[in-house]
Image 1 (cartoon, one colour):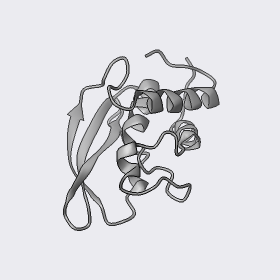
Image 2 (cartoon, one colour):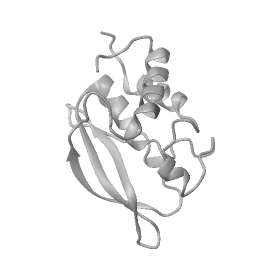
Image 3 (cartoon, one colour):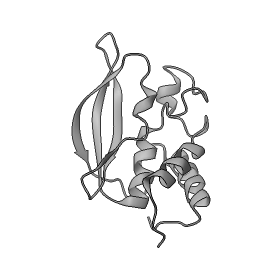
Length: 134
């Protein structure tokens, strides 16, 4: 197993994001674009990071600037206790994330967005040069 740094996994994940891996739910709220590449990628990004680093998955509720609930946001807490949120930057319109619940890791694949997860996972693994076990 290769030893990966946070910079390496972050760069690999960011290089893997695209319109084809963005959540359809988020696309219905606003289109994916290279100007906001993290948009609609939190759930599958957190799963891919979990594949490589382990740890736990966290989820909070997203509220719009007007206070309306607008879905959920996922991120990671590594075994070291470091919280890693590679997609927090997607919230550029006054949204805020409230709460943080530990979420059980869906195995072997997420029920929703399996195809997008597999595409992102493949891109990240290819860029890093190795494939973690599922």
